[in-house]
Image 1: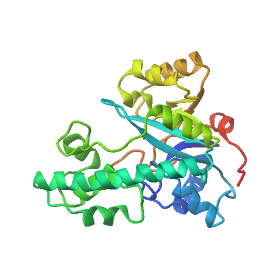
Image 2: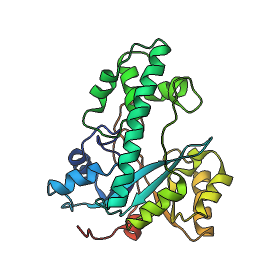
Image 3: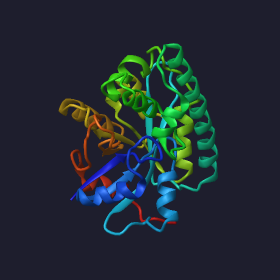
Image 4: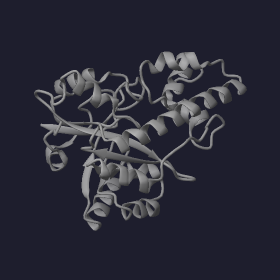
Length: 275
């Protein structure tokens, strides 16, 4: 059996709703999964409130993926085993989601100024019932309109940090994110460290209370993985991994089960649901 500790649902910027994602994971033969939507726990809440978490035939770890503030680099921090109804956590998530909506509106305005024929309605049709509107939703709307062949091309040309339609938004500091995750009973893990593009910064973050490193990741080379496993061991941290599955056409992996980790990594994190 295999596991995947990084995946997204339609509650943020994934294609599948939470129930569909769980069924797809079962069909792929996964034993443990973590649902880690961007800045929201709505996916896990939906499963719980529908009587589908805990789930039969698969072990689900309630998670989240925070975007953290940094002047020049993109930093993401995963939280595992969080209390999805923790008041401090949900209050701060409401602040972050409000900031996402403001950013979404400003990015659409900037794209219009760049003469892209796109509206907020176009993006909201893609986002559906997601409360965590993201650049991915905007990119998908631009691809649908034929401006770019893929979501990646769209990011590279206009939406990535430093590109013409990029707009910064309200983000929590890494220290606050780490504290929030811990206060809600969770385990903070540094997501895809290679994508931070600065191993000195990675090491600084590992000294701020992070408890694990996502060393296994599709965009990590074998050398990258070896380096981040060594960093985790250096600071006596957990080692995790995941596919960052979204289910969006043109974005790898295409399907669940293409990138997996050994169950032993997930078993170290998994706790029997308390709710």
